[in-house]
Length: 256
Image: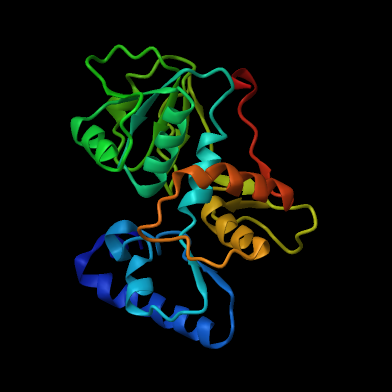
């Protein structure tokens, strides 16, 4: 399935299916639709921007969930952290999370030149630096699609890997810790909920889906997808999720 989403050959078919679902929901009076896992990829439809541009009179509000996912990543960083390593495809989620961390004065060390360039182009210019050697002092790594085995092996013993990607990285280090992909526990009042994805625990929901629910509960009247990159809104989205009963996934005890 992941290959189909990345295939140019299948892109039009997938987008047609998503577009049809959006238009049907809009016709039936649905207020908010969360694009969710894989359906919101930048290379597929510009994080939903394609649908907004094609159908400017949509009443339904589209949410790609990136803001909520970035807020979860930022709030997964252990207190007292002053420096993190970054490695992975610089997605919309990654750019928002890195921007927020840099605004807090946390230094972000980027392993690859091309990823550093993309982050800077997205508007992240403060406190983000390119790694000059393989001797990394930070014990918190932000990781996404593309991280390699040899790169994980460069991390210090006891490092906490925090994914910002849809799918979790391979857990190759028994002497390190792996946080879940961006997700939250659902409110206690929620009924008939098992797990959102097969790698998440019971009553745990992907942050991308949480974002759509919070958007609807708050009654926000704008789209939160595509080229919308309100990095300064992460705190408000996080607080809204907590207010509606969503709870963060706790860190390993050694990183609290």
